[in-house]
Image (tube, rainbow, N blue to C red; front, side, top):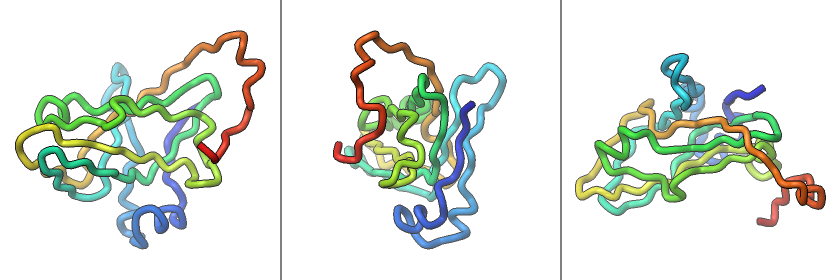
Length: 153
């Protein structure tokens, strides 16, 4: 099974701000239709991003899913086509053992860049990326892997 949920308010206060109203406004990602692959992840606050500027954006979200799955985070095509916004890592990859890790509860962050020539203003609640769950395969040599997430990366 897989799903999204809010990080705890305590973690939210550490990562974002001590603002219960903002925390309560976090939207749990959802799909638009049965045929939609991606779950829309929305921004928490209005943001302005100038040309070539890079912003690190908290989502207030974490996600759990099966060990043989990964959560891909991809910029919504409308962000790329309309505004020339991109994710700095191109595709975000969230592993299943990131969920509830001791460092940050698995809080999902986005790092975006405006590669356009105009300042872009995005509104609170606007969908910026999509989360897509995908099953993956492993090789037989995985038997020797350490089975728990390390925090010394």
